[in-house]
Image (cartoon, rainbow, N blue to C red; front, side, top):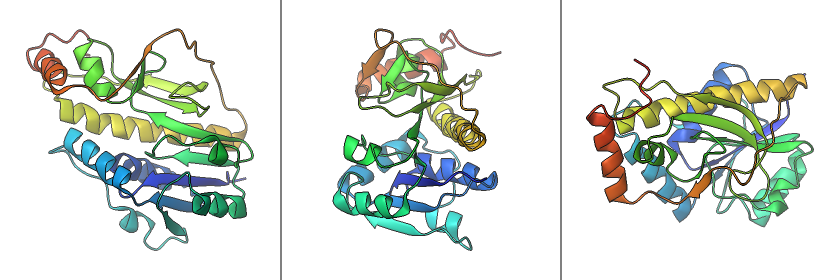
Length: 237
């Protein structure tokens, strides 16, 4: 039986669009989509567009849902009463986060089963923001992780995690682009597992890893130079 899930995303966020594209291709169809239209959404969308500059972009959300019977609603904040009322009326089993602000307990308590998120980094080692840049600067492996969402930042039990191959000739932007695809593929795996009732979960040790803010430009530049000069320790070839 198909999983009853709702997809939450910041307005036209490229990371979320890539995830939705992959979910729909695999016939994993949300009961509805709730977009947040806000200054936060604008800022986050621009961050990811900059990180993936020069790379192919997924179709816009309106294109992805064209011809499909998927209601799309807009709210000013995913944590507000409008979003809560929409979710309470829909009664989903699962919330799937496709790039959002931090979701608060008043929303997390609504789905019958859980809320899941795809993080563009390997948990538990790289929590928080700008994982690709921090992984380059700290000379750590790249990858993506799908996890259950608990209150806190990227602390929930891990469903699936996979390292991304990094090749000589890769750039910061190409890694971000392929991480978005990997995150979407892992989310499709997680939704399928939830649908089939055989979802793995591995608790995280909160004492392992770090939680990062947006990486300063000088440190990002240093990480990019390590990659360009072949000094990154995690090349596949």
